[in-house]
Amino acid sequence: MKTRPAYPAKVYLNGDILDADQAKISVFDRGFIFGDGIYEVMAQINGRFFYKKPHLDRLKWCLGEIDISLDVDALERDIPALLEASELVDKDCLLYIQVSRGVAPRQHSFPKGIPPTVMMYAWEKKLPDIDNDHASVVTMEDFRWSRCDIKMTSLLGNTMANEHAMQNDCYETVFERHGLITEASHCNVFFVKDGVVCTHPAGPYLLNGITRIIVLEICEKLQLPFRLEGVPAAEVSNMDEAFLTGTGSQVRAIKKIDDHTYFEKEPGPITQQIQLAFLDLKRAREGS
Image 1 (cartoon, rainbow, N blue to C red):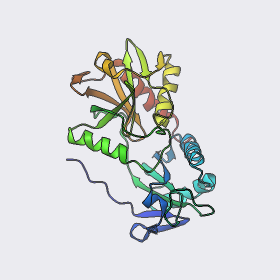
Image 2: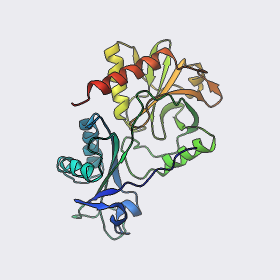
Image 3: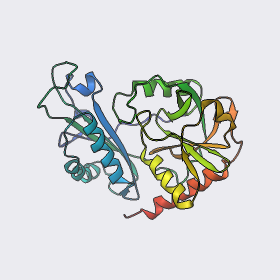
Image 4: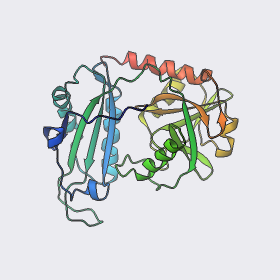
C-alpha cells in the first residue's frame, strides 16, 4: 500500500520559521489564484545537498523567465536554520522551495511593486542507493502548454497526466508531442538502442531536469554514445531499454511502456551501468 505523505513540522514563510499549522497565506496570493509561481526540489544526502548550485541556478533562471525578483542567494542562507528547526540537519531529506508573485487584487497582468511570497519546507526522505522499483508507464499525447522548461507551480496538466498513470496502475505517464517522446509528468525519459542512449533535446517542451543533465555527464564520462533527439512514439517498442530520471526517481528503469515489456527481472546493461555511476557520483559528492 502506498504511504500517505506526512505534513512537515516546520515551514519557512517570508523569512519566518513557523509550525506548519501556523503558516498562512492570503487568499489573494497569485500562487493560490493563478498558480503564478516557481518551485524547486533538492535532495540532501549524508548532510549535503546533491547538486545544490544547479538547482538554485535553475530557480534563478525560472524566476527570471516570469519576471519575479528574488535574492536566491539570501534565501539559500536561510536553509540551514529551517533544517535545524525541522531536526533534519544530519538526516537525508528533500527540500521544497516555492516562490509566488505575491499578494494583489486579482488581475491577469503582472502587478508591480509587490513582494513575492516565499515558502520552504523539508521532510525526511532517504533515497535508495539504486531504485529497484522498476516502472510501468503509459503514453499520452501532450496537451500542455509550450513552456514546459519553466518549473512552474501551475501543474494541473502534469497532475492530470500522473493521475492517468495511477488509474492504469502505472508509475508515470510519458508524453508524446508531434510524434516524439519528450518527457514524463514528473520525470525525464531516456531510451537505449544498440548501445546508444537517446533523449529529447532540452527546449520549451520539457523541463531540463538536473538528474537528466547529470546522466548526460555520466554518458560522456563513461564514453557511452548518446543522441539528443526525440524517439518517435511509434518506435518505443523497438528500443532495447528505457529509464526515467528525476530528483526523487533518480535513475529508475522502465520495465513496461503501454503493452510493451522491456525486461522481466533485471534492467538492461546500459541502464544498470548508469545507475551504478550515479550511485558512485552521490558517494563521491558526500561532504562536498
